[in-house]
Amino acid sequence: MLKDITIGQFFPGNSVIHRMDSRVKIILELIYIVMLFMAQNFYGLAIAGIFMLTAFIVSGISLRMILKSLKPILPIILFTAALNILFVKGDNEPLLSFWIFEIHYEGIELSLFMIIRIIFLIVGMSLLTYTTSPIVLTDAIESLMSPLKKVKFPVHELAMMMTIALRFIPTLVEETDKIMMAQKARGASLDSGGLMKRAKSLVPILIPLFVSAFKRANELATAMECRCYKGGEGRTKLRTLRATKLDFCIIMITLCVFGFVIINNIAF
Image (cartoon, rainbow, N blue to C red; front, side, top):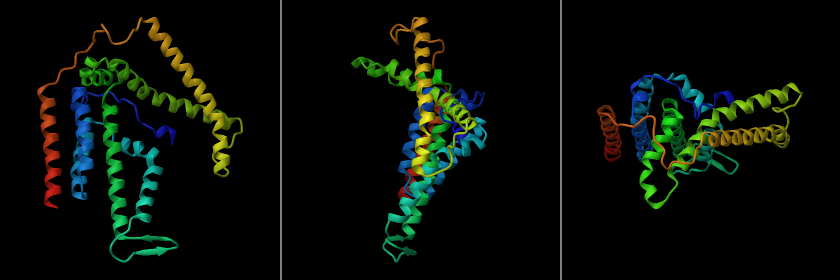
């Protein structure tokens, strides 16, 4: 399960999506999120899903990565589905009734709608980190938030912290997997017993993980100080972000897709 967590990973490539301005990609992700929440029926979700699937195909990222990005959130999806099925009531007679619960057609429909929306949201957001390196992502976030510098907001520091946190997700996942394997080799039982026993078995994992995380943070801080890092003031960029005609064309295509979702809401 831990090896299936792909959040924060970057897969180098030379596709159209990889070559796009990272600032444009962040803006498109925001438009995509709004698009998903504006969709009020399955037709609207289908339009957003086709748009997202096309972007994945163009990026050259294996569709197998979609399934890998969904495995860690499978419990959340199932929990959300169960809540909607059991507690959403309808105007008609229930399809099934047991104990204090009633299952209505509206509950099943809403549950399916929410599952599809969550899946599309996670998969669409994953595409940003799959096709954008952490360094470029830092520059893009800092550039988009640069107007806040006028009110003395630490834009560079915030962008740096966000990107470092995102960058170290795969590292912490790998470290957790190593600790779990080491504990199992010593005879620890992590997958058996009741809920309380499993919770207690996590203590030998969490303590070394926290120690390792603080150690890495201290090493990173030392390395940045040795390189005379003093924040964003006076710093120059190795790569200058420039939006091309291709970026603007993709923005127009995305806005057209967003318009189709709005028209679909009005029509249906």
